[in-house]
Length: 56
Image (cartoon, rainbow, N blue to C red; front, side):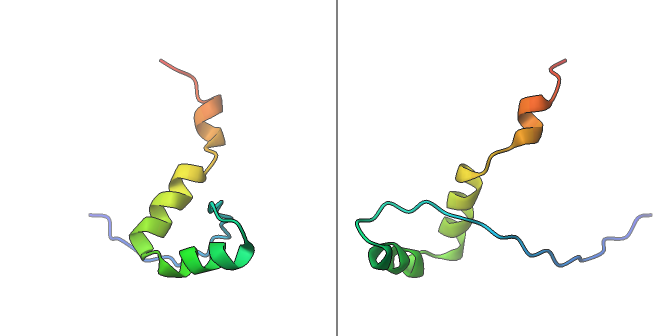
């Protein structure tokens, strides 16, 4: 039976946060919980492999 191995991964993510100033954007970012940050990051990702995948 296969075992599960933990592998640490670090990703650089750029989020677009609506705000009038950078300070306001950082304040909004600081007030977000981890789940909200992850959802926002996934929503803004470009999944290039989906664009090039063949449909069967």
